[in-house]
Image (cartoon, rainbow, N blue to C red; front, side, top):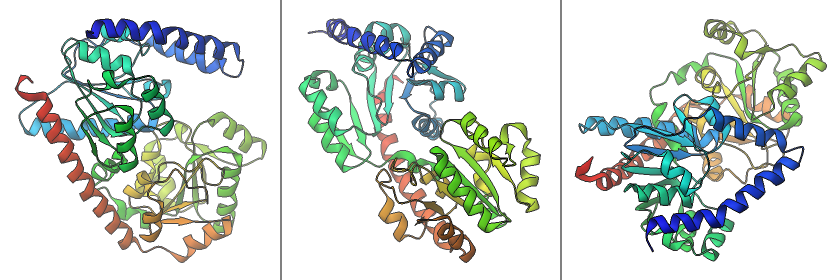
Length: 410
């Protein structure tokens, strides 16, 4: 069966279920704003990517942020080797499309649509992490492109579903898979992927990007950054910590729901500044003057402005039972990280705790006590350097494979 026929069959099977899902979600009033936003984002997007040698696809804000770092580092290596590829990025969800420049949102994951959307010049499609669409694989292969997966993740449920649907023939078109760990390697193989190699979670690439940043400044400011906060409970946890410390500036970065956090603090009479309303010079003044402030980071992609100058980070989703979010980003800036007890999503939790870079607390008083006691920053910077070295080695291994599949035709 040729690829075109497989693509047609794919769309006949999956288009009705996708349409049903959209209609069902639209009829649900709570889901309607999300569906409208999904449609509006696609109405603003282009109808076709005109030119790209490499396309890197991701989905969530975090995945896309990491894929952009990956793209930057791979481009540097290709340029060093005398190659100057045109690299494009596609995403599935609206937030990264609205946050990052020069990121394209795919219309729908159907073969008949994507085969018109991707460029004829495409030589390599890379799925970054876990947003892997069979229709995208078929359309890229139909255009004659190589296909790879890096930092690959697949849930146990998805692996079982793919196996039941007998997707092995489609997945055989994927030229290489670098999984994010041993458990994912086994799932990819079970689902029907070939040429699967165990790699690492490429969130570690942040350690390369942030190498040589002024992390020593973290010792000079009294600032706490709360990242990916979930719910009012986690906000209150940090506000109580600040009350105990008194002279620290608190930066609050909700995972979502900026307006809800603003409303809560306004109604409670809490004095705060929105980061979107202050200049970079004002931000530096706040960090250096040592006055007690509360600053709301009320936009996506703005946390990096604060991390190089903060002294401690708190990562949310750990007081409330969400399992925790990305702790490696603040650590890459040389910051110790404090979390609550819900840690099941943090794969490196034991290593981080034993290395003295992450601390689990049960109360604001315990958090404040850790800050007052102080942290061995030499130990933290040593951990950062080890992570950077490991990420460099893995990036080199992936790059060699990319060069191999691109071949002489690039």
